[in-house]
Amino acid sequence: MTQLTNRRYLDALEKKILIFDGAMGTSIQALNLNAADFGGEATNGCNDYLVISKSDVIESIHRSFLQAGADVLETNSFRSNRLTLKEYGLADRVIEINEAAARLARKVADEFSTKEHPRFVAGSIGPSGKLPSMSDPELSDITFDELSDVFREQAVGLLRGGVDVLVIETSQDILEVKAAILGIQAAIEE
Image (cartoon, rainbow, N blue to C red; front, side, top):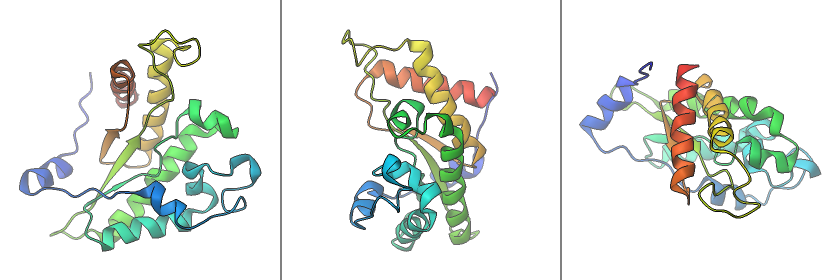
């Protein structure tokens, strides 16, 4: 298996505690955006799509986190997988959305980075909405390999966009976490 290691991030982590940003969703909600901001009624409420429809808003939130002292920006991609984006008719745009989220965070992080204080980008991978270890007809109606591929696709976009590290967040099912890890490994191989 190919090893993909970002020494710059790991070296910084050895020197100090790196502070991650936080509350992207809360920051977005506080702006009281309308359907037009989200790209129309079909994508209204899809926070992840804002990296396409209203990138200046996400860029501004990223800037505010760095101005407050964060070292690491998380991409606005928490639910940017094909299962959750399908609800908004965006399942075929997973790589595009994740890559845009990563490139946007990377741009802002690089603008704030100095040799003495480098800034980093963490690719946010949230839950799929599935619970593969259950026997629920709706929540577990996906094979492990299919779920792993869902996460592979998301990771491909984030890696193409230039993230320093990938973060698996807020999963409620350990089998889903395993699928995410294997999907990430497949994306790295790709």
